[in-house]
Image (cartoon, rainbow, N blue to C red):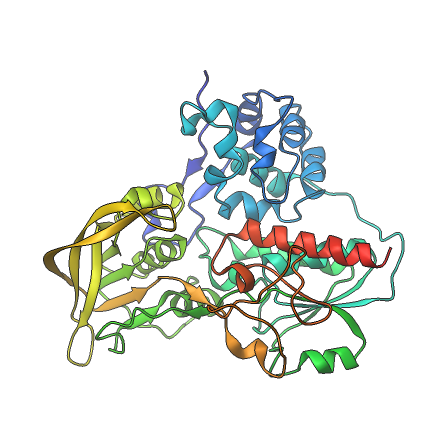
Length: 450
């Protein structure tokens, strides 16, 4: 069995001094070589693993034949953000997980994500025309992946779509949460240009719930609503020392770097450079924060995670890149206190051992009674997010104990004609799962007016 063709990556010694993209992707020759490995299974199990049901076998077949434009058109039938998804989606736990070639060795699965990215980067779509206009106004709250997907599908169906974004730049978590070295911001701008060509309107610096309410939008003629605001409120650890100078939450840290463009030398973004950074958490956000801190000239960066590497929810590729970049991993380690008088001096932790699986299906962690002190002058907390309460001003809507909106199978909330999807419903999840929600809501709304 042939092994997968790896993509080129930026040299390890260059990464600490630049925010340039790390994974350089395929060129045409290697994309075709990788596509030729595909068995074109009659019943393609990979497609069942894709949340938006991209016709994977078909688009790979087009790449195999050198038809990159046709490959992109095939992807675009189900996924309007292939260049983005190909970079940030956890294919190893979705489409690639069920690839026949990866049954014995997951690393031999077809590199579906990188092929999708290649098509998104180099394929060209035909200009789309809207056949029939519907005089029905739809308000989408949030310009992240769920909102972008819903807007694109509805615009193609002829709806009058307006996206309301709280920040001064579009893209939601794609813009403020994911670093430049993993997802270049120019890609998000390009995708939004496609949406505006379809007629999607955008209103930035609008906080629905504060700047304007749902009731007021109804008064302006909006008939349908889709809430895709994400879960931007950080979760606290609730341990001693969390209010010391030098303690940050990953969302705020990454937002400052991304939105205020600290990754570009010509911008004089106000941020303090720390020497010894400790990041608490094991997900993609924790890895993004750690790798960003490294690029901001930290001498040491350490990930502290209470389980083992096997249980880390972060992508395997991101863990590997972090290791290559010199990020240290202090695993089976649980924070107990952030020490310091006025500012952070160390993180006091207890060593853990793994126990039986808990309700998440991962091994639980049990205390050992052994404690360590990790030197630090900055601690970044990346242990999850919850729903921001701003949206819920002046509206009665059912929520669960975590503050997330409760929806039915069609993503309809308890408020009439108001749908919700993405992290505001599920809590922290993936880009592609949020997109699947946006696609479903668009299809449900379209069906109502046929």
